[in-house]
Amino acid sequence: MRILLTHIQELLQVRDNTIDKVSGAEMAVLPLIKNAYLLIENDLIVDFGSMSALPETNYDQKINCEGRVVLPSWCDSHTHIVYVGSREHEFVDRINGLSYEEIANRGGGILNSAKKLNETSEEEIYQQSKKRLDEVISQGTGAVEIKSGYGLSVEGELKMLRVIKRLKENYNLPIKATFLGAHAFPTDFKENHQGYIDLIINEMLPKIAEENLADYIDAFLETGYFSVEETQQIIQAGKKHNMPAKIHVNQFTAINGIAACVKLDALSVDHLEIVTDEDIEALKNTITMPVALPSCSFFISIPYTPARKMINAGLPLALATDFNPGTTPSGNMNLVVATACIKMKMTPEEAINAATINGAYAMGVSQTHGSITIGKKANIIITKPISSYYQIPYAFGSNLIQDVMINGKII
Ligand code: NIG
Ligand code: FE
Image (cartoon, rainbow, N blue to C red):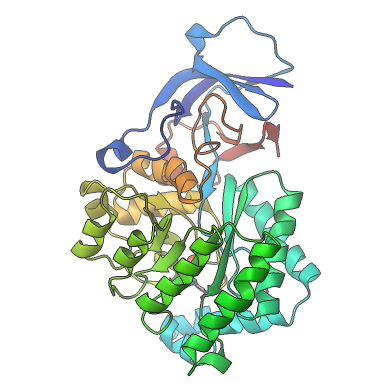
Protein backbone atom coordinates (compact mmCIF):
# COMPACT_ATOMS: atom_id res chain seq x y z
CA MET A 1 0.00 0.00 0.00
CA ARG A 2 1.47 3.35 -1.08
CA ILE A 3 -0.08 6.60 0.12
CA LEU A 4 0.98 9.93 -1.36
CA LEU A 5 0.26 13.13 0.57
CA THR A 6 0.49 16.15 -1.70
CA HIS A 7 0.41 19.95 -1.40
CA ILE A 8 1.24 19.85 2.31
CA GLN A 9 1.34 23.49 3.38
CA GLU A 10 4.11 22.81 5.93
CA LEU A 11 5.81 19.46 6.46
CA LEU A 12 7.54 19.77 9.83
CA GLN A 13 10.52 18.10 11.45
CA VAL A 14 12.20 16.75 8.32
CA ARG A 15 15.54 15.19 9.31
CA ASP A 16 18.14 12.78 8.06
CA ASN A 17 18.65 9.68 10.14
CA THR A 18 21.76 10.82 12.02
CA ILE A 19 19.76 12.99 14.43
CA ASP A 20 18.43 11.32 17.57
CA LYS A 21 17.90 14.45 19.71
CA VAL A 22 18.48 18.19 19.58
CA SER A 23 20.09 20.33 22.28
CA GLY A 24 20.53 23.98 23.21
CA ALA A 25 20.41 26.40 20.27
CA GLU A 26 19.62 23.54 17.84
CA MET A 27 16.25 23.27 19.52
CA ALA A 28 15.17 26.59 17.99
CA VAL A 29 15.52 25.09 14.51
CA LEU A 30 12.60 23.07 13.20
CA PRO A 31 13.43 22.03 9.64
CA LEU A 32 10.36 22.20 7.38
CA ILE A 33 9.36 22.05 3.73
CA LYS A 34 6.59 24.29 2.42
CA ASN A 35 4.27 22.92 -0.27
CA ALA A 36 5.60 19.43 0.26
CA TYR A 37 4.79 15.83 -0.57
CA LEU A 38 5.19 12.78 1.64
CA LEU A 39 5.20 9.22 0.33
CA ILE A 40 4.34 6.34 2.63
CA GLU A 41 4.71 2.66 1.77
CA ASN A 42 3.01 0.26 4.16
CA ASP A 43 4.15 1.40 7.62
CA LEU A 44 7.17 3.46 6.55
CA ILE A 45 8.08 6.90 5.26
CA VAL A 46 9.83 6.27 1.94
CA ASP A 47 10.17 9.72 0.39
CA PHE A 48 9.38 13.39 0.91
CA GLY A 49 10.30 16.71 -0.62
CA SER A 50 9.05 19.84 -2.27
CA MET A 51 6.04 19.51 -4.63
CA SER A 52 8.18 21.05 -7.35
CA ALA A 53 10.43 18.00 -7.13
CA LEU A 54 7.66 15.37 -6.92
CA PRO A 55 8.85 12.41 -9.01
CA GLU A 56 6.61 10.33 -11.27
CA THR A 57 5.45 7.65 -8.90
CA ASN A 58 2.71 5.08 -8.49
CA TYR A 59 0.46 5.01 -5.43
CA ASP A 60 -2.76 3.42 -4.18
CA GLN A 61 -4.18 6.46 -2.45
CA LYS A 62 -3.57 10.19 -2.77
CA ILE A 63 -4.46 12.69 -0.03
CA ASN A 64 -4.50 16.37 -0.89
CA CYS A 65 -3.18 18.21 2.18
CA GLU A 66 -3.61 21.75 0.91
CA GLY A 67 -3.69 24.22 3.79
CA ARG A 68 -2.70 21.52 6.28
CA VAL A 69 0.35 20.99 8.41
CA VAL A 70 1.86 17.50 8.64
CA LEU A 71 4.20 16.55 11.44
CA PRO A 72 5.45 13.44 13.23
CA SER A 73 3.11 12.20 15.95
CA TRP A 74 3.77 13.31 19.50
CA CYS A 75 6.15 11.08 21.48
CA ASP A 76 4.90 11.07 25.07
CA SER A 77 7.79 9.65 27.09
CA HIS A 78 6.21 9.85 30.58
CA THR A 79 2.73 8.63 31.49
CA HIS A 80 0.87 6.67 34.13
CA ILE A 81 -2.04 5.78 31.81
CA VAL A 82 -2.73 2.50 33.62
CA TYR A 83 -4.71 3.38 36.73
CA VAL A 84 -8.12 2.86 38.29
CA GLY A 85 -10.84 5.42 38.88
CA SER A 86 -9.97 9.04 39.45
CA ARG A 87 -9.11 11.47 42.26
CA GLU A 88 -11.31 14.48 41.65
CA HIS A 89 -12.04 14.83 45.38
CA GLU A 90 -8.36 15.58 45.98
CA PHE A 91 -8.56 18.15 43.18
CA VAL A 92 -11.34 19.93 45.07
CA ASP A 93 -9.42 19.56 48.36
CA ARG A 94 -6.55 21.42 46.68
CA ILE A 95 -8.88 24.17 45.51
CA ASN A 96 -9.91 24.48 49.15
CA GLY A 97 -6.33 24.97 50.24
CA LEU A 98 -4.69 21.59 50.90
CA SER A 99 -1.33 20.86 49.25
CA TYR A 100 -0.36 17.69 47.34
CA GLU A 101 1.82 16.76 50.31
CA GLU A 102 -0.95 17.29 52.86
CA ILE A 103 -3.34 15.17 50.81
CA ALA A 104 -0.75 12.39 50.54
CA ASN A 105 -0.14 12.50 54.29
CA ARG A 106 -3.87 11.91 54.87
CA GLY A 107 -3.72 8.65 52.88
CA GLY A 108 -4.69 10.28 49.60
CA GLY A 109 -2.37 10.60 46.64
CA ILE A 110 -0.46 7.62 45.30
CA LEU A 111 -1.62 5.33 48.14
CA ASN A 112 -5.24 6.16 47.30
CA SER A 113 -4.73 5.03 43.70
CA ALA A 114 -2.78 1.97 44.88
CA LYS A 115 -5.67 0.85 47.09
CA LYS A 116 -8.09 1.08 44.17
CA LEU A 117 -5.75 -0.72 41.82
CA ASN A 118 -5.13 -3.64 44.16
CA GLU A 119 -8.90 -4.12 44.57
CA THR A 120 -9.56 -4.19 40.80
CA SER A 121 -9.27 -7.06 38.32
CA GLU A 122 -6.69 -7.07 35.56
CA GLU A 123 -9.48 -7.12 32.96
CA GLU A 124 -11.17 -4.04 34.44
CA ILE A 125 -7.85 -2.17 34.67
CA TYR A 126 -7.18 -3.02 31.04
CA GLN A 127 -10.58 -1.71 29.94
CA GLN A 128 -10.14 1.58 31.81
CA SER A 129 -6.59 2.07 30.51
CA LYS A 130 -7.47 1.23 26.92
CA LYS A 131 -9.98 4.09 26.84
CA ARG A 132 -7.27 6.55 27.86
CA LEU A 133 -4.86 5.16 25.29
CA ASP A 134 -7.48 5.49 22.55
CA GLU A 135 -8.07 9.07 23.62
CA VAL A 136 -4.41 10.11 23.51
CA ILE A 137 -3.92 8.45 20.13
CA SER A 138 -6.82 10.53 18.80
CA GLN A 139 -5.03 13.58 20.21
CA GLY A 140 -1.93 12.83 18.14
CA THR A 141 0.26 10.66 20.35
CA GLY A 142 2.05 8.05 18.26
CA ALA A 143 4.52 6.59 20.79
CA VAL A 144 4.03 6.36 24.52
CA GLU A 145 5.75 5.23 27.70
CA ILE A 146 3.57 3.84 30.50
CA LYS A 147 4.66 3.29 34.11
CA SER A 148 3.54 0.89 36.80
CA GLY A 149 3.66 2.25 40.36
CA TYR A 150 0.09 2.00 41.64
CA GLY A 151 0.54 -1.61 42.71
CA LEU A 152 3.22 -1.20 45.39
CA SER A 153 2.91 -4.94 46.05
CA VAL A 154 4.35 -7.88 44.14
CA GLU A 155 0.95 -8.85 42.75
CA GLY A 156 -0.18 -5.27 42.12
CA GLU A 157 2.95 -4.27 40.21
CA LEU A 158 2.87 -7.46 38.12
CA LYS A 159 -0.81 -6.87 37.40
CA MET A 160 -0.13 -3.34 36.13
CA LEU A 161 2.80 -4.43 33.99
CA ARG A 162 0.75 -7.27 32.50
CA VAL A 163 -1.89 -4.72 31.53
CA ILE A 164 0.82 -2.66 29.80
CA LYS A 165 2.04 -5.81 28.05
CA ARG A 166 -1.48 -6.50 26.80
CA LEU A 167 -1.72 -2.93 25.50
CA LYS A 168 1.60 -3.47 23.69
CA GLU A 169 0.20 -6.62 22.09
CA ASN A 170 -3.07 -5.05 20.99
CA TYR A 171 -1.86 -1.68 19.70
CA ASN A 172 0.61 -1.05 16.93
CA LEU A 173 2.20 2.12 18.25
CA PRO A 174 5.36 1.72 20.31
CA ILE A 175 4.61 1.40 24.01
CA LYS A 176 7.51 1.30 26.47
CA ALA A 177 6.88 -0.14 29.94
CA THR A 178 8.57 1.30 33.00
CA PHE A 179 8.63 -0.44 36.37
CA LEU A 180 7.89 2.13 39.10
CA GLY A 181 7.61 -0.05 42.19
CA ALA A 182 9.53 2.72 43.99
CA HIS A 183 6.70 5.25 43.59
CA ALA A 184 5.84 5.51 47.31
CA PHE A 185 6.35 3.48 50.47
CA PRO A 186 3.27 1.35 51.21
CA THR A 187 1.82 1.95 54.70
CA ASP A 188 3.20 -1.38 56.01
CA PHE A 189 6.72 -0.24 55.14
CA LYS A 190 6.44 3.34 56.35
CA GLU A 191 9.01 2.68 59.08
CA ASN A 192 10.91 0.03 57.13
CA HIS A 193 12.16 1.58 53.92
CA GLN A 194 14.88 -0.97 53.37
CA GLY A 195 12.32 -3.75 53.73
CA TYR A 196 10.33 -2.34 50.80
CA ILE A 197 13.42 -1.71 48.70
CA ASP A 198 14.47 -5.31 49.31
CA LEU A 199 11.01 -6.43 48.21
CA ILE A 200 11.40 -4.43 44.99
CA ILE A 201 14.87 -5.72 44.27
CA ASN A 202 14.56 -9.32 45.40
CA GLU A 203 10.90 -10.16 44.73
CA MET A 204 9.46 -7.82 42.12
CA LEU A 205 12.37 -7.25 39.75
CA PRO A 206 13.33 -10.90 39.12
CA LYS A 207 9.71 -11.80 38.32
CA ILE A 208 9.34 -8.77 36.06
CA ALA A 209 12.56 -9.61 34.26
CA GLU A 210 11.54 -13.26 33.89
CA GLU A 211 8.24 -12.31 32.23
CA ASN A 212 9.99 -9.56 30.26
CA LEU A 213 7.49 -6.99 31.51
CA ALA A 214 9.57 -3.80 31.71
CA ASP A 215 11.90 -1.83 29.46
CA TYR A 216 12.91 0.78 32.06
CA ILE A 217 13.02 1.35 35.81
CA ASP A 218 11.83 4.43 37.69
CA ALA A 219 11.71 5.78 41.25
CA PHE A 220 10.21 8.88 42.86
CA LEU A 221 13.37 10.56 44.14
CA GLU A 222 11.94 13.23 46.42
CA THR A 223 11.97 14.48 50.00
CA GLY A 224 9.55 12.22 51.87
CA TYR A 225 9.69 9.52 49.15
CA PHE A 226 12.89 7.82 47.95
CA SER A 227 16.22 9.32 49.02
CA VAL A 228 19.20 9.66 46.70
CA GLU A 229 20.80 6.61 48.26
CA GLU A 230 17.61 4.54 48.06
CA THR A 231 17.11 5.54 44.41
CA GLN A 232 20.70 4.56 43.62
CA GLN A 233 19.98 1.06 44.91
CA ILE A 234 16.93 0.85 42.64
CA ILE A 235 18.83 2.09 39.57
CA GLN A 236 21.70 -0.34 40.18
CA ALA A 237 19.26 -3.22 40.50
CA GLY A 238 17.55 -2.18 37.26
CA LYS A 239 20.91 -2.12 35.49
CA LYS A 240 21.46 -5.76 36.39
CA HIS A 241 18.27 -6.59 34.50
CA ASN A 242 19.04 -4.34 31.53
CA MET A 243 16.49 -1.74 32.53
CA PRO A 244 17.92 1.76 32.14
CA ALA A 245 16.54 4.39 34.51
CA LYS A 246 13.99 7.12 33.91
CA ILE A 247 13.63 8.89 37.23
CA HIS A 248 11.03 11.22 38.80
CA VAL A 249 13.21 13.89 40.40
CA ASN A 250 13.22 17.56 41.48
CA GLN A 251 9.43 17.86 41.45
CA PHE A 252 9.23 19.67 44.79
CA THR A 253 12.79 19.87 46.10
CA ALA A 254 16.37 19.77 44.75
CA ILE A 255 18.47 17.30 46.76
CA ASN A 256 21.28 16.52 44.30
CA GLY A 257 19.29 13.69 42.81
CA ILE A 258 19.92 14.65 39.19
CA ALA A 259 23.70 14.24 39.46
CA ALA A 260 23.21 10.82 41.02
CA CYS A 261 20.91 9.72 38.17
CA VAL A 262 23.27 11.05 35.51
CA LYS A 263 26.21 9.19 37.05
CA LEU A 264 24.23 5.97 36.76
CA ASP A 265 23.50 6.60 33.05
CA ALA A 266 19.81 7.42 33.43
CA LEU A 267 18.08 7.72 30.05
CA SER A 268 15.94 10.55 31.40
CA VAL A 269 15.27 12.66 34.49
CA ASP A 270 11.70 13.88 34.65
CA HIS A 271 9.67 16.67 36.33
CA LEU A 272 12.45 19.19 37.14
CA GLU A 273 10.15 21.90 38.42
CA ILE A 274 12.92 22.94 40.82
CA VAL A 275 16.34 23.05 39.15
CA THR A 276 19.59 24.43 40.57
CA ASP A 277 22.73 25.58 38.74
CA GLU A 278 24.44 22.41 39.97
CA ASP A 279 21.69 20.30 38.43
CA ILE A 280 22.23 22.02 35.08
CA GLU A 281 25.98 21.46 35.28
CA ALA A 282 25.43 17.79 36.05
CA LEU A 283 23.31 17.35 32.91
CA LYS A 284 25.74 18.95 30.46
CA ASN A 285 27.24 16.62 27.82
CA THR A 286 25.58 13.49 29.13
CA ILE A 287 23.26 10.89 27.61
CA THR A 288 20.48 11.85 30.07
CA MET A 289 17.46 13.67 28.63
CA PRO A 290 15.77 16.19 30.95
CA VAL A 291 11.97 15.93 30.63
CA ALA A 292 9.52 18.68 31.60
CA LEU A 293 5.85 18.01 32.42
CA PRO A 294 4.14 21.40 32.18
CA SER A 295 0.57 20.14 32.44
CA CYS A 296 1.50 18.79 35.89
CA SER A 297 2.76 22.25 36.90
CA PHE A 298 -0.45 23.72 35.54
CA PHE A 299 -2.76 21.30 37.28
CA ILE A 300 -1.25 21.36 40.77
CA SER A 301 0.03 24.93 40.62
CA ILE A 302 3.72 24.31 41.12
CA PRO A 303 6.61 26.06 39.31
CA TYR A 304 7.32 25.29 35.66
CA THR A 305 10.62 23.72 34.62
CA PRO A 306 13.05 26.58 33.85
CA ALA A 307 13.27 25.66 30.17
CA ARG A 308 14.91 28.88 29.01
CA LYS A 309 17.71 28.59 31.50
CA MET A 310 18.31 24.95 30.60
CA ILE A 311 18.18 25.39 26.83
CA ASN A 312 20.34 28.51 27.03
CA ALA A 313 22.89 26.41 28.94
CA GLY A 314 23.02 24.07 25.94
CA LEU A 315 20.87 21.26 27.31
CA PRO A 316 18.29 19.26 25.38
CA LEU A 317 14.76 19.16 26.76
CA ALA A 318 11.81 16.84 26.13
CA LEU A 319 8.14 17.45 26.91
CA ALA A 320 5.69 14.81 28.13
CA THR A 321 2.24 14.71 29.73
CA ASP A 322 2.67 12.74 32.99
CA PHE A 323 -0.96 11.55 32.45
CA ASN A 324 -1.98 10.26 35.92
CA PRO A 325 -4.98 10.55 38.25
CA GLY A 326 -3.30 12.78 40.85
CA THR A 327 -1.20 15.48 39.30
CA THR A 328 -2.16 15.45 35.57
CA PRO A 329 -5.46 13.87 34.57
CA SER A 330 -4.78 14.72 30.93
CA GLY A 331 -2.73 13.03 28.22
CA ASN A 332 -3.12 15.81 25.69
CA MET A 333 0.27 16.58 24.15
CA ASN A 334 -1.16 19.54 22.23
CA LEU A 335 -1.92 21.19 25.53
CA VAL A 336 1.58 20.34 26.78
CA VAL A 337 3.14 22.02 23.74
CA ALA A 338 0.94 25.09 24.18
CA THR A 339 1.66 25.31 27.91
CA ALA A 340 5.40 25.04 27.27
CA CYS A 341 5.20 28.01 24.91
CA ILE A 342 2.85 30.07 27.05
CA LYS A 343 4.29 29.40 30.49
CA MET A 344 7.87 28.26 29.91
CA LYS A 345 8.62 30.67 27.04
CA MET A 346 9.71 27.92 24.73
CA THR A 347 9.33 28.88 21.08
CA PRO A 348 6.97 26.76 18.97
CA GLU A 349 10.04 25.25 17.27
CA GLU A 350 11.61 24.29 20.60
CA ALA A 351 8.37 22.88 21.95
CA ILE A 352 7.71 20.77 18.85
CA ASN A 353 11.28 19.44 18.89
CA ALA A 354 10.85 18.64 22.59
CA ALA A 355 7.56 16.80 21.99
CA THR A 356 8.75 14.76 18.99
CA ILE A 357 12.43 13.88 18.48
CA ASN A 358 13.51 14.55 22.07
CA GLY A 359 10.50 12.71 23.45
CA ALA A 360 11.39 9.78 21.22
CA TYR A 361 14.95 9.82 22.60
CA ALA A 362 13.66 9.88 26.19
CA MET A 363 11.95 6.52 25.64
CA GLY A 364 14.49 4.93 23.32
CA VAL A 365 12.53 5.09 20.05
CA SER A 366 14.32 7.89 18.21
CA GLN A 367 15.70 5.47 15.59
CA THR A 368 12.16 4.77 14.39
CA HIS A 369 9.99 7.70 15.51
CA GLY A 370 10.01 11.42 16.25
CA SER A 371 10.81 12.88 12.85
CA ILE A 372 9.92 12.81 9.16
CA THR A 373 12.84 10.69 8.03
CA ILE A 374 13.11 8.09 5.27
CA GLY A 375 12.85 4.65 6.87
CA LYS A 376 11.04 5.83 9.99
CA LYS A 377 7.54 4.69 10.87
CA ALA A 378 4.69 6.59 9.26
CA ASN A 379 3.21 7.89 12.52
CA ILE A 380 2.01 11.36 11.66
CA ILE A 381 -0.48 14.09 12.46
CA ILE A 382 -2.42 15.84 9.69
CA THR A 383 -3.97 19.08 10.91
CA LYS A 384 -7.15 20.78 9.79
CA PRO A 385 -6.51 23.73 7.47
CA ILE A 386 -4.55 26.28 9.56
CA SER A 387 -2.57 29.38 8.68
CA SER A 388 0.75 28.08 10.03
CA TYR A 389 2.17 25.67 12.62
CA TYR A 390 2.24 28.53 15.14
CA GLN A 391 -1.48 27.81 15.49
CA ILE A 392 -0.66 24.58 17.34
CA PRO A 393 0.39 26.34 20.57
CA TYR A 394 -1.53 29.56 19.82
CA ALA A 395 -5.04 28.11 19.50
CA PHE A 396 -4.49 26.19 22.72
CA GLY A 397 -8.12 25.28 23.31
CA SER A 398 -8.96 24.10 19.80
CA ASN A 399 -8.65 20.64 18.40
CA LEU A 400 -6.65 21.25 15.25
CA ILE A 401 -6.09 17.60 14.37
CA GLN A 402 -7.86 16.27 11.30
CA ASP A 403 -6.29 12.81 11.09
CA VAL A 404 -3.69 10.73 12.82
CA MET A 405 -1.82 7.98 11.07
CA ILE A 406 -0.15 5.08 12.91
CA ASN A 407 2.09 2.76 10.90
CA GLY A 408 0.74 4.19 7.66
CA LYS A 409 -2.92 3.72 8.55
CA ILE A 410 -5.36 6.52 9.29
CA ILE A 411 -6.93 5.81 12.68
O1 NIG B 1 4.57 12.12 38.21
N1 NIG B 1 5.30 12.54 41.39
C1 NIG B 1 5.10 11.36 41.39
N2 NIG B 1 4.22 10.67 40.65
C2 NIG B 1 3.19 11.21 39.84
C3 NIG B 1 1.97 11.54 40.58
C4 NIG B 1 1.35 10.35 41.14
C5 NIG B 1 0.02 10.57 41.75
O2 NIG B 1 -0.25 11.58 42.43
O3 NIG B 1 -0.78 9.65 41.57
C6 NIG B 1 3.72 12.38 39.04
O4 NIG B 1 3.33 13.54 39.23
FE1 FE C 1 5.00 10.91 36.67
